[in-house]
Length: 191
Image 1: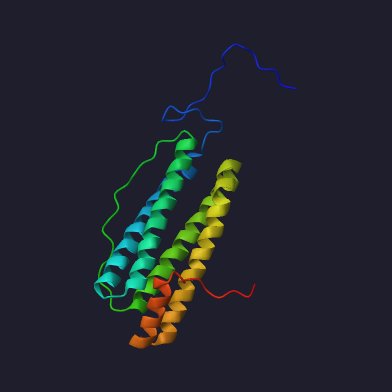
Image 2: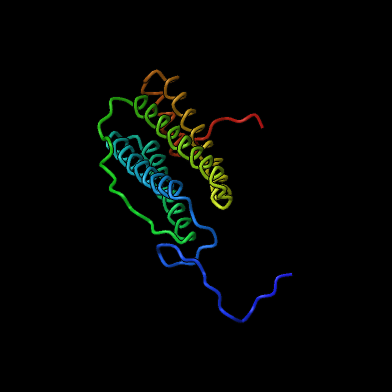
């Protein structure tokens, strides 16, 4: 049984001055900051895609990509909140302007799939780093992030497959656009 004394004890604090229960490995902290930037870049990329689709009267794709932009911004905020909770200072790096010129929806969705795969890889690397550093707090934090990211990657692969199946036929693309306008981007499941 632990008995707490009335004598104040020294509490370790992080760079922000907030109390820290467990210090963070410097390389893990740097990688978390880089991932936060990656999420912000993804948000900017999705916003640019929403604009591209909106300019071409593809309201479903525009709606979908706009929601993805907001989701990626929320992911960045979740990482910022986590860093703050661990007593760290959040560093916001510059986010360059995203690509804005595209030839087709297939080209866009190929890029989206690759971007989502990169984010998945980054999260998996963070998880491995946390495990090596013995940082269970970060590993636990990352678990639901990895699961959600795998679902996003699956959704991107599904949409890419649907667009490829359409063979760039306007009628088929408009059906896909209507599905997205109705908020139905998810792949079929067997359960």
